[in-house]
Image 1 (cartoon, rainbow, N blue to C red):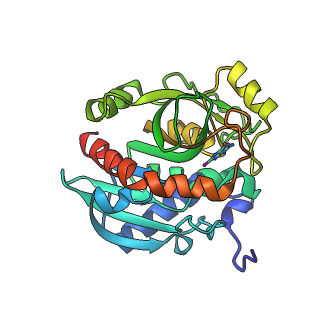
Image 2 (spheres, helix red, strand yellow):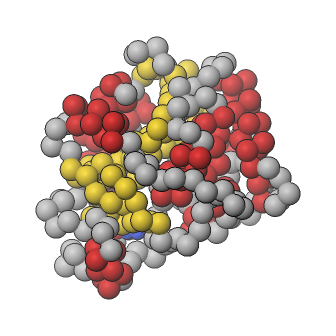
Length: 277
Ligand code: 8IG
């Protein structure tokens, strides 16, 4: 895709936190909402949750906000939405994820998370569609992320920034989610670079090192969210069993279809969880 305007994050001399602060100021101006309490990134299969969590105050095309890119993928809605929850809190819904595999660098990947922190959010809900390694997870199963393994060999942290990642995906928030659905299982999310799916051998490696879910997002975002001081809830929708675990080859269309089918149920679940946070 041809980009006509320069993204300030691509200039190494720019402070990415300053860009995030500017983005937060623009969001406050365009939405009329001074502070957002909670932010949600809605990945494939989770988009409908935005319509269920509350009353939409404003919808902004993400590329109108500094540092955000145009969406790379059809089906990934490039909007930022400000929603007033029933409990009076304000949620910022990020429907514009930049994936690491797009090759624009990790600063762009985590810009939405840094913007959410700058906008005042103290809770970050990260959702995604992913492959499952546990065989009993049928396509359409929502899973809580308990921890992650970052196989991108990259980090959103720059320089000697040493940050603890213990309890990165808040145990407290996982327990809140289980008050809504006690049957929610959990697993370790393994982020691969993508955009290819894994080979069956790579899935076996992920399993051997303690992974249960394979995907192409979230881990880098969670690190940035921790740096921003936010409490994190991570949820994956298992849209397919990982390569070699399921007997048939993976098809992007099947993944999309499984997401669409599960969307109403898991979106309603997420809306209930958000209300309880
Ligand atoms: I949806 O099986 C979805 N995203 N890496 N592997 C990886 N990402 C995914 C998968 C999968 N399914």
